[in-house]
Amino acid sequence: MFKELNQVIEYIEEHLTTELSLNKISEYAGIPDHHFRKVFFYLSGLTLNEYIKNRKLSEANKDLLQGEKVTDVALKYGYQSTDGFTRAFKKWSGFLPSEAIKKGLSKTFPKLSFIITVKGGVPMEFRIENKPAFNFAGVSKRVPMQFEGVNNEIVKLAESITDEQKEEMHRLQNMEPYEIVNVSYDADANFLKEEGYLTHLIGVLTTENQISERLEKVPVEACTWAVFPNEGPFPSTLQNTMAKIYAEWLPSSGYELVNAPSFSFTKMDEHKKDYAYSEIWIPVRKKS
Image 1 (tube, helix red, strand yellow):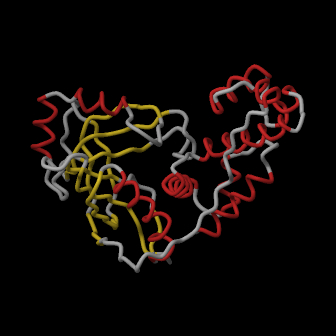
Image 2: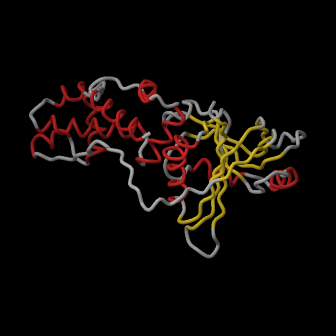
Image 3: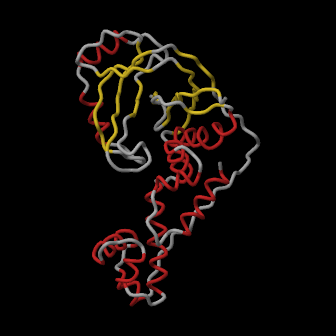
């Protein structure tokens, strides 16, 4: 996995002055889109779009210091207008391209390099569970795709749940985990780009099919689930667990992802600030 990621970094470096298609990048990596996007984000803390933008502007800064004209640099890195480049450069660096030229101002963003650091061989806790077909039942909403930070639209969704909806979810809930879960699916860009919308559902697992119109029903076929419990500072522990799942566990586990929504739940500790127990449920199957 780390070899493929570093190959992608070199591919990006070679194509900074051309149009970089995220689909082509994932194809080049030989990793499914959804899987690759998650691995890159959880390991780097950046979306692929953000990383490419930062690298382009960093190289643009170097070119400006070497005497290239603002117009030429803007076109070189794919901006359709000098104004658009100037706005992006100012937002990224804190100063104008003209100031970089006149005052020799510089901001850099070095290319990434992915490495493995071995720290005593700490095993990753997980379990495998088989579940029959079930439904997610809950309240859903189309929300903006957002890879980092608090998604305010999801917060609003949680706040919008009525007492009647809560009562019905409680009545329907009849499968482990007996928790309120978060599920994201039907992303406009297949989770590859931080753009467009996805559907986010807050609800429960149930084998019941009689679900009122107050709730959304999302059917899930019978399959195998890899379950990863984690406990610690929130959300860093959850994010680190996600990184390990996709970058370390999946490639060596003998399992592969299947086309079904993954889900998670989080229980905040009442006695410790920003501390939580979480579980991440990933749908998988044995590799053939």
